[in-house]
Length: 581
Image (cartoon, rainbow, N blue to C red; front, side):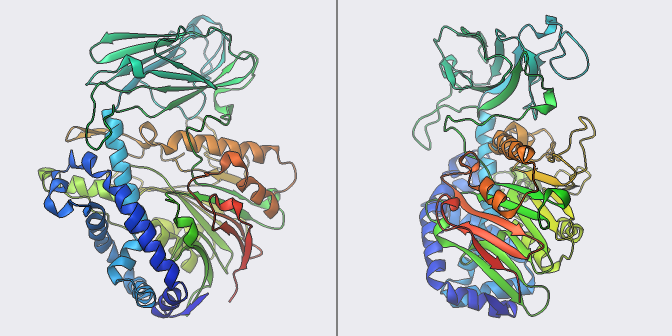
């Protein structure tokens, strides 16, 4: 517990957790994060030559980059925010700059990592088209548009990663054709097609790979055995290019991220938008952070919210997790579930019964990309510079100010975020909103704020954004309303595209959301705290490498149930903390 003025709370925090804070900074920042972030330097330097300079060499890239952004973000923290960090520094023995970096690095790191990932994906082969052969003559409506046997039925061209099923009611002998392209050429021997648990590679008799041109390859997969009837089938596609990258080593090609398609075979009886992605057991992917919230008739004893948070653990972050009861001189008391030395968590609950949880959402519509756009006249001197307010401080704004979910959503939308986030806000009276945030550097007319509730629907598909009923939401780490989060453009040869085309979160989020929704759909009785704890510990939804904390918020009871301190977090028991003065 910390109480008093902002400085007094920071000082108490720093003093009580001194050894943990110093250990956290050394083991996570110095030993893990700085080397991790420095691996992005060669890719980023191909676009921004400033990072080839002496100042950023000899392992200084990550520290200098994070400190520059931290100083820029500091202006948005306000006097109380800076006082609290001074208290932490004085109590723990860190310097003020170290405390500042520790409290701002998450969003900056995500933005820089995202830019590096987007650059790598920009070098990798592009999926030009995907076609399920024979659907134009099978007498069925396979794409759910109300029409049968259109000329291009079964053809996704140009290809866009599907939110729902690629096709339904396909024949068990249906063949698949995919076209990859890359300016450096596509290496036929790197083409991979996975169908459920079966992997098919170059030379397999069921996979024909043809080079159509120096830049284009066509792969056709023919099932030697029929697909399972009346079933959902998951297809995963990938390929690499012919250009070998030497630095940083080892030498390697650029590989397309795994593209996932879900289809159903004859007799499944499901529509395109009714698909629930089955779990994959091939150890390729890990579940991302997710949130589930219930209210009214879906919740026993009052509204509830559960949050599973995972990011880069580096075998150390979990050792420094803490739940802190904040008691400021003015405003409500509140609990945050976070880390030693950091004034916030990614979830929390205040004594007014308002809870909030935020998940990172990859986007190129972020403040760091915005800083590059501002310097586009001379990219040789451009630097990556974060601006706005880190997501953890947005969580604090909700907890310090809100008496309702609507007020919490307003508080989230009042300040530009550094990066992309999906935040869920709920209150003890049944208020429930999701707010998708980006930095709006492309000025797309929404101000970077996309709000919706359980009853809201996509105007095109008419499917609920992320709900089963009027009284629940399931939120992952990809946008479901803000699907065109960035415009499409070329920046100094780098292609900028929306999140769903490059983010590793996209398919992982769709799968974990479907998994949790499936469990929620099967639950007949009202949801209670123990059932939500049971969902959080299910192996299919737990990141076993980077899980940091698992939280259930009882909004009416004003209790935070948190599991943390191990990897995964759910190997630890849940501990209850009352949100009371």
